[in-house]
Length: 194
Image 1 (spheres, helix red, strand yellow):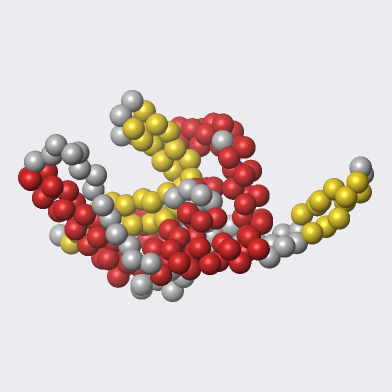
Image 2 (image 1 turned 120 degrees about the vertical axis):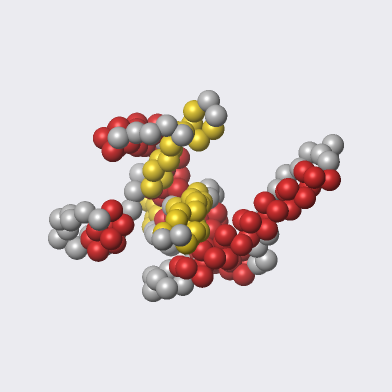
């Protein structure tokens, strides 16, 4: 992955947002159905009736519950002619991802606002139709810490290069203390303390 400055990333995010306006509008419309927002139905030319139907929320909630409570499995794709060594490597990869997810879940339990990773994946897959999962390992005082986060696709921007994903950015609100602790810099809060 290439390295970009903060101003370059902001510019790339704005370009990506303008190129994906139709997709983002569809995501917002789908979420409005799930929230049971009233929508307009044409009765006759010029006449509209406001309708709300609970079936999108009921069906969406049921699918989210099934996915959130189901057995979570990770699979590595193996070509048909792969050797036994390749199958063993694939199995090791699956065990690594499973362990990383479990350790990250244990770490996130200390945050009061945390939602289980599988439940977040179920929600975003069902409501948005897309899933953005960011996972990496970082080191802190000789301790390797897994970090897995589910990002809302609506607030995620990305660019692809010749070798796949070139950059990704997720915009979100964060508490001042979180930012100062993460980047060791003093910042000014907005009127809501974020």
